[in-house]
Amino acid sequence: MPSLRKIAVYSRKSKFTGKGESIQNQMEMCQQYIAAHFPCVPEQEILLFEDEGFSGKNTNRPQFQAMMRMVRKCQLSAVVCYRLDRISRNIGDFAKLIEEFSATQTTFVSIKEQFDTGSPMGKAMMYIASVFSQLERETIAERIRDNMLELAKTGRWLGGVTPTGYQSAAIDTKTANQKKKRAFALVPVEEEARLVKTIYALFLRLGSLTGVQQVLAQMGALTKNQKPFSRFAIRDILKNPVYLVADQQAYQYFTRQGVEVYSPPSCFNGNFGVMAYNKTAQSSQVHARAMQEWIVAVGRHQGLISSSDWIAAQQLLEQNSGKTGRRVRSNTALLPGLLCCQACKGYMRPKMRPNGTFSYLCQNKEASKGALCQSANANGAQLDHLVQEQLGNLPENKTLFYQLLKKELQKMQQNTPQPQKLLQKRLLEIQKELHTLTLSLKEAQNSPARQYILQHICALHEEKTACQQALQPVNAPVFSGGLPQLIATLTSFEKLLGSLSLKNRRQICRQFVKAVQWDGQNACILLKPADKIHSRPLCEDCK
Image (cartoon, rainbow, N blue to C red; front, side):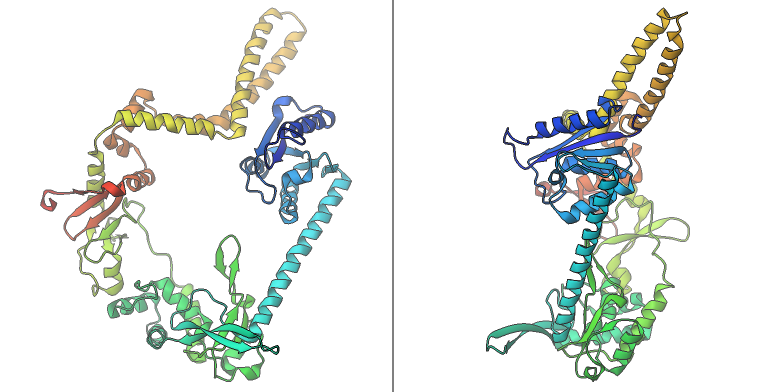
């Protein structure tokens, strides 16, 4: 029975040698296997993926990733390779791939080891691989947690970015064998410690991160990186347990929250601070873990915030999380991230007005309630229009456009995905077949073969329609006025910007504009490239 989906053949070799298990040899053996075991699959439905010069230690290979994208879209019925290590030499990666093949009902075949997930024995091998993979993951997780528990015994600082209020200091000790051993602990920095206490006091009094941010801005307080405090930086300080004094109230709080507390209750005597391990997950991107996954111990450092204040801050943060919504953002602004205030060098963001219009206002002015900056707001729609108008006046260069267009077309042809190339090839074949069958139909007016020819024509017509629909996003015209009008539009900035969506206009701005500076009355555009930046005034008064 013919396959409804295509079959992929994958081959890989770390380097070209011209002998042995070359890419070509692997391909030929896989095709012979398909011919013997999948005789109903036509040759045009066999897709070839090959990675020459790539190691099997990981799956970061271009053709392999292209094949897996088709697997995830359920476009392949089977993946055939010469040997298992052509796919991956990593047991963890291989087990994950088997899971993906199983989820998409894609049969995996390795002709050397006779590993076929379409057979009962192949499925059994798949389950065995999954069991070992799960065992490996659980063993690694258990080993990491055991290491965390051993570290919790010491209560030491493990390194990284030191929290505001502390600095890292080395502590030298000697082991039983009189060998020198160095560990690190947090030591309070007096000025920063006072700032941390101020932040907690302000938050408990005002009950608002924005309110604390405004007061800190008015005070001129800066972070360790010498930047104004953001709401996120304030929240991180308020949520960090490192500032908490380790007393009995703190012990009871963590116990109620379901946190694993490694130190015994007697150690929570109020003499030291709290150290929390396993706070972040280091996967594809770092993110905070839930409190229930922490491992809490008594540290070697001095706590700065009483347990009653720290716990009250956590409760207030939790209450506020249910109240605060996302800040309204303008969907009509052209210059977010480009417009900056010339007076204080801060960025300006769009803010909606009740009447539906918007203005650009300085973030430093907003955060400090005018203490750090008094620059006037900018009319959003007017400023966007003037910037777009100035970009539209850039000189036209059709020769440069043609060169860039030629390069981009070459890139598009080189980067056309393998499935799309095959669809285009198949579409040409269908058109030729339809032409031939149409001619045959005229000669078979009264022949019994006429019915079969008509059925074949209908089937080909359906396949042609499916190919055209699949290729439509690639071949869809980008401009309705024809090629001459398209060229005239793209070689003129003014016409180009007028025909684009807001999202694309923003992208154009970022390609040519380094920044737009606002001085309260006028704005100047700083154009790229960086070595030839010059300002373009938006009005006569700015010259």
